[in-house]
Image (cartoon, rainbow, N blue to C red; front, side):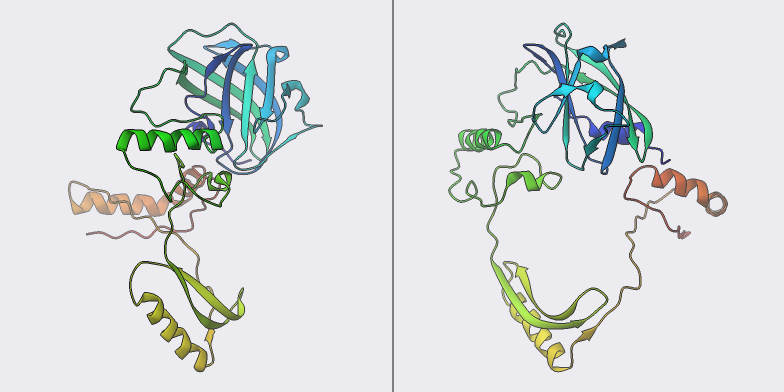
Length: 290
């Protein structure tokens, strides 16, 4: 079973989603980590007070709600990446201010997890200078139109082209926030590029979006030379992403001691690093003394 630190789990919570409704209190979470199977929601509490399961309902992406007791190991809930889960609690309205929330749940493959966060009750009052948001669905057409009108009103600019787009805003989740539209970038293509690789084999035309003059023409000339030379044979020899944190010590001796410590504790460092993100796997550490 992989362990997920609390600070990683807290990324799932939709801040400002805590609000009173006509039937109780609501908040939501979003799967920003990895696809899981939700086996059970075993505990939900507000300010330390556990809410009986009979007073809890859930819904996914604004679909019809159901009792949380419907989620069980026998009837798990598929919880894909990007899915929003809303919890409705049949309790008295909360007072304005900060409140503590706890959700205990079981998943596959991560086992039992517990999310603990604090949030300020969203009363609907908003700073006039704050960008409009919808904590339930910030990519809905309604809130996008509100943001477009807001930025035009605040700046005096007219969104003649930016506000018109053909993509589904929902597909931009995880790629951009406060979505208002799309910008047009000049697009050309070069090719054909003849490739003999592990994954791509054949001739390909390559789209290139740029505003730099002669760039596409330069690529095109290079691809023409490669094509006439028989193409490109390529292979993947390594697939890594590097990070280079710097550590400052009092003297070279202490720096050397730390380097020796890293070598001796690489396994522990790897376990801690891998636990921070389900998509991360640390493979090695190179250290340099300067």
